Length: 77
Image (cartoon, rainbow, N blue to C red; front, side):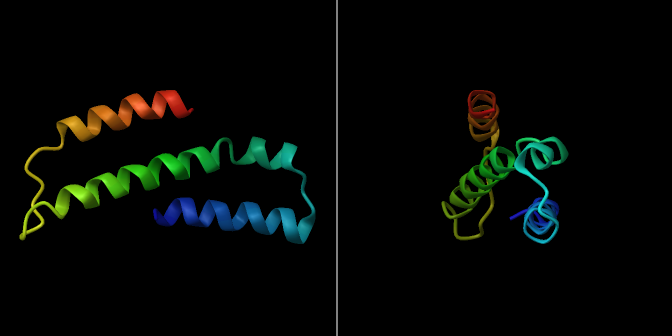
């Protein structure tokens, strides 16, 4: 997972647990963090799947994957 997204999730969870900050404020501070994490992880899995197609893990074509990612990102968010 992306290091930055992990840090954001850690801070959000800590603010909720340790300081008792409500979801309303956390959603304003970290808007759509769960959706962004889901989109990111899905894209990462797609890229890893492309790497497994060749022994040298070289990705020959990324255009269709990027197109699918952009289209799905608009649907999810």
